[in-house]
Length: 489
Image (cartoon, rainbow, N blue to C red; front, side, top):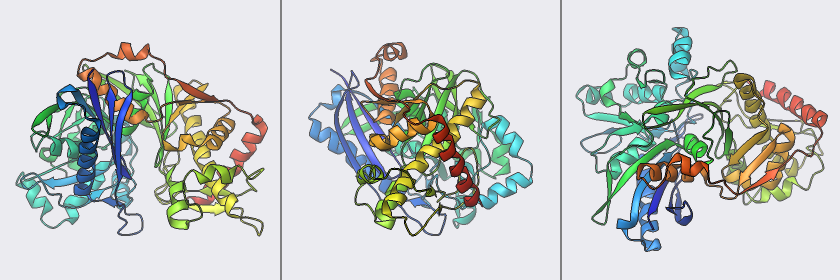
C-alpha cells in the first residue's frame, strides 16, 4: 500500500491529511494560527508561523500514523489563493507579513489602474477584474512601502509568491521557487491565453519579473521535501478552489461545485475553452495536466463561513459554529431580518471594494436567533447571486450543485440553499474535497492512478432537494437584493 500527503494551507489553519492509495483518509492534524488586523480593511498573516504550523502538522501525521516514509508516494499542496509573501532568498525571511486575499489596502492602486484604462486588458488577458483581492497589487504595495525592498529586488535578492510557492520553497530547503498555473492565474499578472507572466502588467505595477516563481503544470515535479533524512517528491499543486473542483471530480465541462469555507467559491469547469464572462465572473485556470490547460468560470464570495466565525468570536452570541444550525431552526421565518456580511467589500457579481457589512429589518421583536439565521441565509443568497450569473454566462441551467467545505455540515443551511436556488444540492460523504483534490493530483503525478480511473469511482453523497415554493424563494431573494443595495459603498 502506498500513501499520499495532502497539505491544505487555509486562511485560518494549516492542515495535513494522509490518504492511502485508494484516497481513503488514514490520518490528519490541524493547527489554527493568528489573524492580524493592523488597520480597518487590512488582513495579514505571519508567513513564518504559517510554515511552522504546516510543518508541525506534517510531522504530527507522520509520527502518529506509523507509516514508513518510503511508503509515501508523493505530496500534494493546496492553499489559500491570492495571499502573497515577499522574502529575502538569502536569509529566507519575509520582508513583511503575508498580505491576505481579504485585504483591501490596495484599493487605491486598483483605482489608478482603472483610471489608466487597464480594465479591458486585464479582463481579456488574465480573466480577472481589477480588484484588491488579487496578488499583483499586494506585491507592488510591499515593494513600495517596505524600506529597502525595491533596492533588494533590484539586486536580485528578493523573491515572492503565493502560499504554495512559500511552502514549496521551505519544503525543498530553498531549492525550488515555483508555482502552478492555477495559482499563477490568481495574481492578475499571468496571461491565461499565452500561459506566461504578462510583461505589460508587470511594467504597469512596476514588478520585476526576476522575483516571480517558475510556473509549472498542476501535476508536475516540484522537487523533494526532506523528513527525518528521507525524501518525498512533491507531485501536485493547485489553489484551494481548483483543488476542490478536482476533488469533486468535476472533470466534464459544465460541472460545478461550491466550496463553503471562509468565503464561498463556485467554479464551473469549461474544459479547454476560455469562457469570457458577461456577468462579472472570473475566468480562471482550473488545472494543467500533461501540458493541457483546463479553464473554469468562478464566482468569489468573500465572506461565507467567516460570518459564523464572526458571530462566535466577535459578537460572542454563539459558542460554536454547530450551534447556529439549532438556533436557526427555532424560527418559522427570518422576521424580515437580512444580514449582508460585506466585511471586506463585495465579490462576484457586484465587485464593490467599498461595501460594508449591514443588518437590516431590526425591530423590537428581533432577537439573537434572527441575527444567527440571517447570517446563515446570507451565505445561501450570495451563492444564488453567483449561480444566476454563471447560468447566464455558460448558457446552461445547472440542475445540480456539488458542495463541500466546513459549513456544508450544517443541514439547515444546505436545505435552505437548495430552497433558495430551487436546485438539487449534493454533499459528498467526505467533506474535505480540497485536500482530496490535492492528494488526487499528487497520486496522478506519482503514477498511482489516472483521471480516467478517478472518473469511474463515484463519490458517496447526500442530496438536498427544494421544499420551498419558487414564489417564496424569489420573494426572499428580492428582499436580499434590497439589503445589498444599502450595503454598497
